Length: 107
Image 1 (cartoon, rainbow, N blue to C red):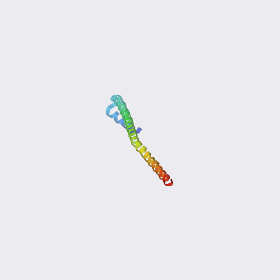
Image 2 (image 1 turned 90 degrees about the vertical axis):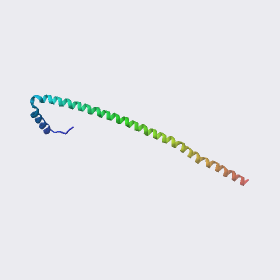
Image 3 (image 1 turned 120 degrees about the vertical axis):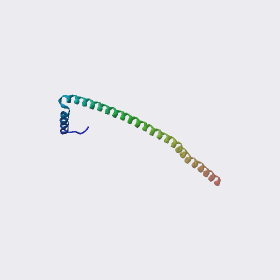
Image 4 (image 1 turned 180 degrees about the horizontal axis):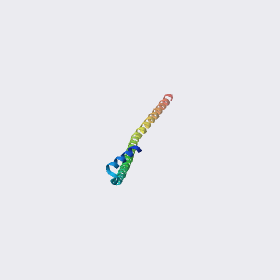
């Protein structure tokens, strides 16, 4: 967490020993240990909450993307069908008219 080496820990222990004395040092160590345990627990809870929120947001974004994709597909499908139908319809009547006018000329 703080990247403390063995030498730094020894210096911290010696300073604490000199400042608080041998009688108060075990109580101080217990208090610090409990505080660190509570801090780690709180950080773990915060991390879990953030991950759950991230998953919820991610799911919401995927739902919106799917809705947009579906809406675009629904809007494009009728136009594609109209274009396909419009492209096929003019060919048939023109071909029939030419065939009919060609028969009339021959006959």
